[in-house]
Length: 215
Ligand code: ADP
Image (cartoon, rainbow, N blue to C red; front, side, top):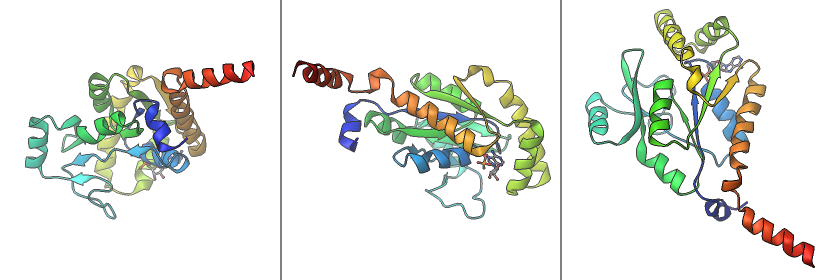
């Protein structure tokens, strides 16, 4: 299907992927986007410092606390949250709304608080929770990612407990045990959403099929 065709089918899909830090959300979304390169990715803004190798405007928009506060005040954020009690993260509203209106699909990686705000602002959002197969697996992944010290890992595990308490608000659950299977599951959700009757040009197909039968 061409881009123009995609646009005619109406609004894009908003896929919200939540779950504890280190569970593999970023890796799974990268896997989905490899298979479906047209799926866009919302770049969050954050007040935290860039990690080694992160690029401003590609991984995050790195902003000052003052700039973040201004964006919040002026309603420029679709959702925002304080993570681990230290830094602010938020999703700029305009790129998401523009994508959806334009028929482009977009995926957000946020926590459960953010997912709740997005659901409130945009009830069409498809909410997916990614869980680890065990607490130990999560701890190992956080340690292996090696982007923070032991204290930060403990803090992230404490936040994970809170995330697990909110699984019930999601529509889909994926246990990220074998990565490939988890990406398959995320893709299945995406493809199923795209196949909803209201997203397809079914009347056109119906007309063509009926015409064919006449001939
Ligand atoms: P998140 O985006 O949820 O914080 P990441 O995508 O950064 O998590 O993944 C955290 C770490 O776990 C990375 O080192 C990643 O390669 C690893 N990882 C992701 N999925 C799996 C999996 N199914 N099995 C083992 N390791 C995984």
